[in-house]
Length: 178
Image (tube, rainbow, N blue to C red; front, side, top):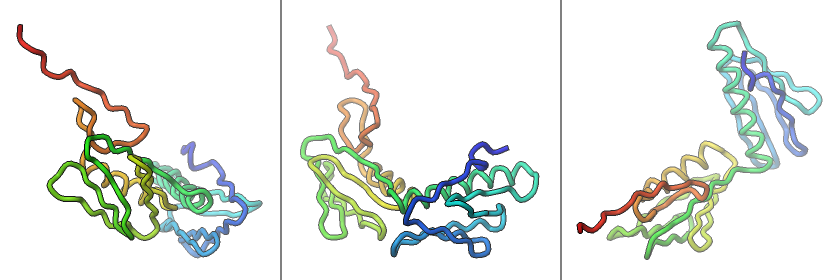
């Protein structure tokens, strides 16, 4: 039995949830998001809450129940509050700047790295912190992971791009021979 799937999802003010066949549409203002369930769960909307129920009694249907509940909750939270990932740049000469729809990173290579900002994302830079903001949790996390992948933090000095809440385990350097 899914512990996640049986929890109801509260619909905040200003967010509209509709069911169109097997697709659940979430709308706030001019922003929309949809979750395709492929008929694996049934959906009921009542009293500003959404309740998902399993279709069938198999172990697979229980897994889909929790998965689609989490996806729908992320769509609702994304449109009402949004998601944010923060990355920190550490290193001498390492810097970032947003130029139009391109994030330009200088990370110690012989050339700057240009990352094209996708639609639905907003990237801001404050000193050495890059903030990735958007309504789609998967898209925000993927963009942050790609930016981090350009220069992962190294364990000796901690140089590179890391998440602000990430802790880098440091290694001891070489010691002089006596």
